[in-house]
Length: 471
Image 1 (tube, one colour):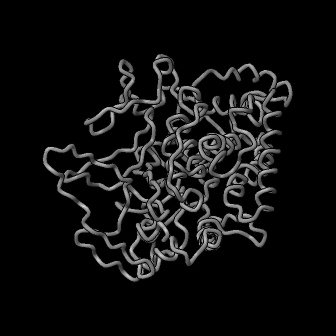
Image 2: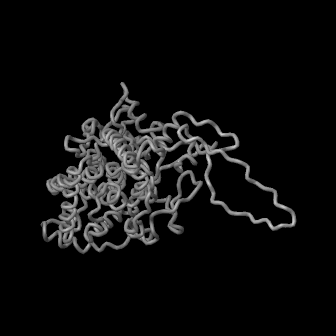
């Protein structure tokens, strides 16, 4: 009789009858208790009858009706079909199995915005998500330009169904107010500060006539007209860079100077298909051919850029540009997520000496502290960030070294590394069905990213090579 009959009751394998073999030991004689191997029996004191479905599944999986080889084949076929179905919704592909990113539906119409004025109530509200590299672009440019007050932000996090959701306003029986931490503290998931919705999908549906399309981040919401102003990330960072200089805290920073616009566009034409979208084409590939094509394009581009950055501080020389921001948001997630989860395994960014130092350079990008309108929230003695209302203190990403200087890092404050890991590993079920979250790679920790990069010395070399200085 098979062992399965001892574990799973079934009409095909009736329970083994048992008898009472206990004997009363004779008096004045030593009684030896013999040890018998433990046998798992299906019998219980009051066994509940198995349901037909449970019985059928038991016989199918553990009975003689399906050999192991056939079981593996059946499960493989079922899982593959289910996986392709899920991937078709998560990541649509073309005929070759290569991921095809849908275009953004709402493009910015810069002419429709009136010129912003000081002390004017914010007209636009930014919706962003910490795991998303496209939303991260907008958060970085917003921070570097000092637009935190003029463009408020709400931070969504992945929901169990893959949509972007906002944290619950209630914790137990107490109403808890959550504030997005800016100007020194790492950004964190928040409530919907503009509309009070529970998900980004609900915000999109507030438009007249509703909306049933993709609810993506980043998204700029027009508070007055109650419509989506823009959900194309590059349009948003262009607007943040040059559209609000009269209200920006750091108007002198230009991430897209006219003299470099052509070079920036050339770099973007390489970065977007091969790196930004390239990692997704690796991770979402639905055929071996599509994966091979994507991974070869990705690493040949990274190799080329590592060589280029050997004697150039940034992509366009001595000036930080929008092209650098677009590349950075993929690099900062590469070793954290893409290297393993998206099968970009040929090399890690930490193995590229120039790319890794370049990434640290941008991570540590700072602005003058005097331009921060909320610098009073920083307690320079304890190196803590006070979060309004002042009910708790959270550890800041800043070190005392920065607080002793006249500048304060802004890019690092937008990099919630744990949220990046969680956002991919815990919610991309088709790629990680076991929901196991890996530990953070040592080369991606804040302490490593904050180490000196020594790339300032390349500035003079860049000026000599391309023939321009600071814009």
